Length: 295
Image 1 (cartoon, one colour):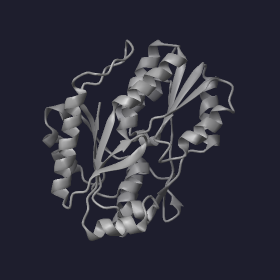
Image 2 (spheres, one colour):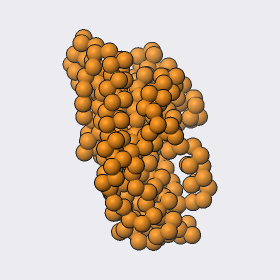
Image 3 (cartoon, one colour):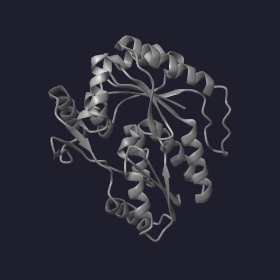
């Protein structure tokens, strides 16, 4: 039995087959990050129903909001894993600059008996999920928590997310950008192309049309893929080194566009997971978002 358990959150966009296999095998837990529409929580709905409700809310211009996990929820998860015999936990979450979940995890870690290492991935979506998947596989064969934490930090530094948002309206309604910025973006028809750097959303370019934005998203993704393929990263034995593959393509209500985007990325993306953004992220991205994750 593995001795180190991994805890993450629902922003990680873990592929369903991996999540089902890992939770059945043990040693992986995920806390859900709540989503509400017009103040009404969606926790009673199925995943498909939540996705549909968010799409409808965006179409109708309703406010979609999210919140982080609470210390109480995380304490419950940590104590359950301790009762199952795990000797240590790595609790790794979406960027602390975008959510309070890491802070909640630190509070929870101080209130349980077994050692819990909290890691801010400084990322989100499958840029977090890829780290979780590799880390879960690595910890199957080690009981050294300190080494596992070092591996997790190296993995976080080696993955990159690029994304395109066709409008800032959803971010404005959710209070994530200033109304004035959203208004300027609308006036000038700006379609931001961005990445995540040091845990923060960084706009790289501001094209004026969707085709141009997707073209630049493609170019930025492939440029980083080529650089990553040079193999400058070195990892502990048992950890797959990054090779510049596009491991995931995300979308929100635009599956056909995402499929075309994946095809435009060519060979580096031929095995990429095609995944909808998880609800806690699609709540803020709005319809038509695209993202690529390179490892």
